[in-house]
Every structure is written in C-alpha cells, then in structure tokens.
Image (cartoon, rainbow, N blue to C red; front, side):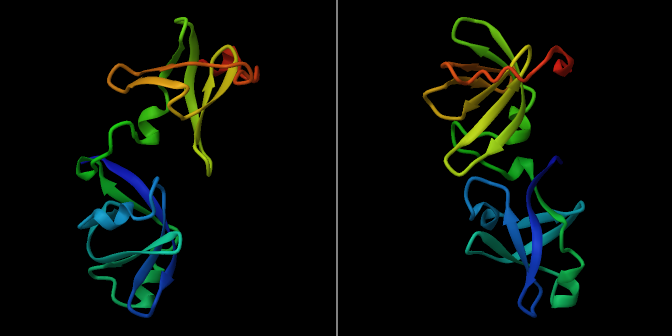
Length: 170
C-alpha cells in the first residue's frame, strides 16, 4: 500500500470529534470520496465528510470528542494511492516532480523540481542548465508520459529565468 498525503488537520470542529482538514487537492471535496483515511499509517473509517468553506470536516470512527480530536492536530491525512481515480490529464504532484522536460525542438530543458500551486493554475519549475517556469496549461504542456518519465512542452520567451545551474543536475 502506498500512501498519498491528501491534507493537513488544521483544527478540531465541534465537541463530537470532527477534524478540520485543509485538503491538498484540486477540489475541496476530494477527501469526501473515501471510506478510509490514514493518519500516521493508522486506518480510520470515515463516518462523515463534508466541505466547510475551504476545508473538509471529517468525522472518523474512534475519534468521538474534542479531546480525542486534538491529538491529531497538525498531522497529515493520507489516502491509499490505489483507491484514487484521477481524471485524464491530472496527476499527483509527486509523480510530476523529477520528470525530464523536453521542448518542441527536442532540447532537454531539465527536470521538474517544484510545482507551484497558484490560484489560476499550477506552474512547473524546471531546472537544468537554466531555470524555466512553465504554466500547467494545455497551451504549453503537449504531453505527459509518467511511465517514461518525460514531459513535452512548448515554450515562449519569458519562461526561461536563467536562475538554474549545473549544480542542480541531481
């Protein structure tokens, strides 16, 4: 079983042991689709899950009061990777980091070292000889092949920031 971190418990909610979770996903309701979540490797049955503003309120079996819930504050909520169904064209950030990025003329730009999650769209930070910041939009991302470890992109002037370096080649 491989765990994927899906959010962080930021607080408690109610005297009945609900956990307030900041989800780390494209949609706030992502965590509402699971019957079981994991905290520090321990499985918890989800009794109830609902979106509340920008968080998810989780009521987990065995956590029945505010005292029980407070023990989990600031811990990560994980899900079993095999239970996640991603839409076509969506990926786990962990699968994107480290991909080799090749531009339209076949030049290797470097590897994805970071994914910036911004309000409008994600931005891939690619480091090689130079650094590139490429928005994760259809206009620039031509193909993603996770199995081969390669992403094909189109670039335009201004994406190259020239802050990368050969010392970042690992």
